[in-house]
Image (cartoon, rainbow over all chains, first blue to last red):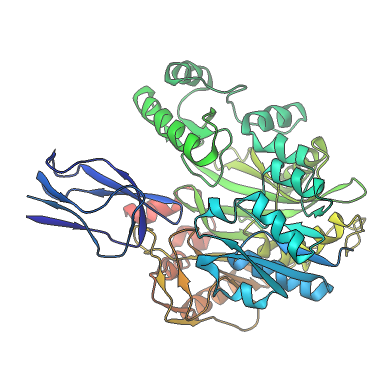
Length: 70
Length: 448
């Protein structure tokens, strides 16, 4: 199991995966937006997205859980 | 002269305009969103008006809310700063329609320069050199490929209504161009509300050099020297200096003359900036775009000329003569450098918002800090990452570099990560120190 967490305070601009999706290492899961910059959040391991903790428009704090990949 | 000014902006630039307002005896009215309530500029203004939620669309980008704030506070003029609505012809028109003084150029000039394709064509007609590129918007990826064959690779893909480097990318071949076109298009739509795209020949080794112009109330246009803005990450400036170490006196004279013609071609009034690229190999320059507002890096020009550019903006907007003699060439003394202190990590340059727990600014001879934050304030994710501009002035470039190194060491910010360590590195970088650098410097520093 791998937890994907936010590196910084940001707004969730795009969510590109859904729970149950298969992702490969390096796939973009969500795109955050902070300080006028888009920051893609990538899967650091392949697997199934078992939990997705954010929706478009949410605000995440540093270290908040974004997704869990099994 | 108007007796009060509403500053339709935030952070360091709001504070900068307040400083000149105070000195000129003009009442300074600030506006603030939820996120900015505790920032220094809000407390330093003579009056501050709350304008809404933190998202820019609900506060700093809402012209109706800003005009209502101006009415409520009894403001007689509006200074837009840079970014937000500074280059919106619609906002300028509604300010004028409300009977207020607009501290900026005529809305028509903003409009002509805001569309990069139109601006290129206009400059070409005025005898200002432009790079080979689009004369009209490029409709789709196929048209882009066709256009690129005419222009020649590599090409730069840009949003016609764009700015700030957003959505811009260079393409060396057809495959890269198709990808760059799609990215540029979606960004253009999202950030600038117009999907129009243009292509321009890309210069791989170029310096980004811009000329400060001032269009006077009597119609004359003056050029106040150049700024070298080649230190960039993601096509956005990180450090600037004047004079440019890559511009010879002969080239400078040609650039000043071209920038003056550019301003005259649109009947420019107030402070503006003509951005150019200088080909590092041939020493030739081409027009890039014109920014119809005060530029972020204006302090370096102020340091070497001794001219307060915000004061000139006020005077020109009021129809008054400028504070210096426009018939005598503006003298430039010494060398100035600006370092943009961003809330971002110094390796990858990723944003780093957060609460500021400690803040100590350097001071001393030749050091000027224009800061938007202080200890106890919070950097939020809603706006750009600029915390402060650390500016230094010295009799020579070497002295300016030495002062910059000392000042960077003494600047202490705790809480968010900052790019101060990057600046320390830059000031020791051989390419930067020798002055031979170009716009590829930062990526070379990071790929080494």
